[in-house]
View 1 (cartoon, rainbow over the protein chains, first blue to last red):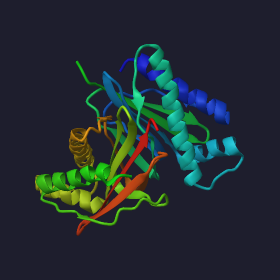
View 2: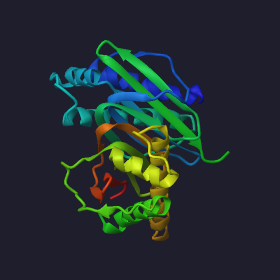
View 3: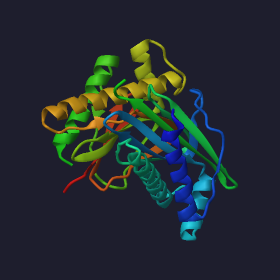
View 4: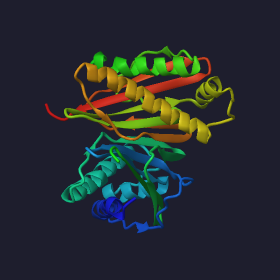
Length: 157
Length: 157
């Protein structure tokens, strides 16, 4: 997958967390291998559909990192992934995808976003079912790990 | 949410499982309450975007039911939710949404499907983040439960 498609998502995630929670995520090494899975305790998922492409985006957080983001944002440290943490992950998903959508639209790459879904459950895995390239990008923070996964299928060859 | 939007998904699910696996799911009582969550061990999720609406669809299976569908389809009974079961759930998600899309398009309600995502993890919950109505529909089978959840947001009032 072209880095030009991926970087807007990575930038948007780092910007959103830095602005909202003063949390700086350290990017790890991107993986394009098929045997890698995004993994976490709470994930935000969103579908994307455009004239030439369709795809999906997910962001998964380990519980401690999700709780720490909540702590930094609202001043309260939740014990575990509760309803408020799920709301926050849904919002982050919308903001990251919206930020990337805006940047990509400026380059002539248009898509619309579906409504986000939040998955909660200890150590679940996320697997994007696309024939196109999939990219997983891990992020590290002292409180825990996050993963984003992006895939796009071309509708027309 | 209008039953006219929902029934095509319910019909498509029952048709797909009946045709592919000779499995008859018994529909339970639909819920529109906000405090209900779809829940399962393996889920297929897909985003939908149309000119007037955006939304999401998910189908969640308890492990035993997912394995039994695999058993009926391929003759092999997997021990647990493995890669093949995840593939099958992704396919079911595509087929159900595709069937509903076709039926709804005939009534003038158009949308495109994003690429599906499969979530695997014991007893995870699925929460659709939409301002519009959400419908959860449980299904029963002797091997286990399934849930579908559908939501649509109107883009223009």
